[in-house]
Image (cartoon, rainbow, N blue to C red; front, side, top):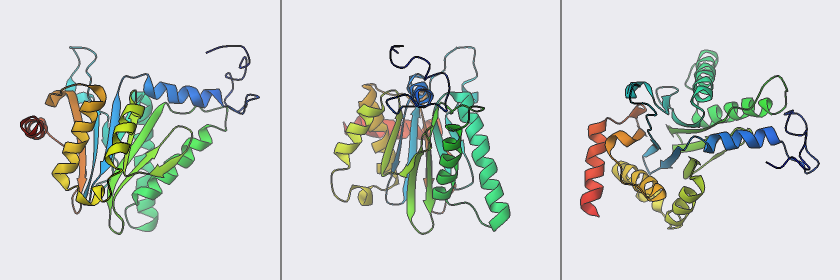
Length: 248
């Protein structure tokens, strides 16, 4: 970036520029989009789905060891978009927070409480020079006993909010525009059963990237009412891709 008016203000996370900007936090957001990965999270009437690209940078790598989908508790899963080492560190912290909540209160942490806790931790990282913001966006999904399917997104600045559908990564703006058009229709969420939610996630990501997927190119995580979070197998993804191709 230009070093004109910003010279020196991007060297310390605790210093605002004269324009009121924290450059190190902005750089954390750029780290999310620099990985050439786009992810989506969508909730339906009885389920929630996360989908992301799966890229294997080297043919010598074991593809099974690379993932952006993680299980936090039995009921809560997430997709992490951005720097993978930062993602694993944040997932480990989220699991520790969920475990501590369970130990203290005797029941599993609700997804909104976990999102709030992780956002609070991220916000502290923007205040102290001894730490840096994590270059990763966390999108959490779960089915709440009272509120039903939930989607939350937590960013490096410590901001979190619930969504009907959320996106992150390189082409997040294009994905956001597509989802916004789809969700303008009244009652869409209530009409999305499990299969329709998965298919909407696949078609939206495919349209965003202008690409036709094979099962090895994407990862899909799902959670349904009364069931645990899980990652779909490749043959399950193939079934959905075939169904979409036949319909089109």
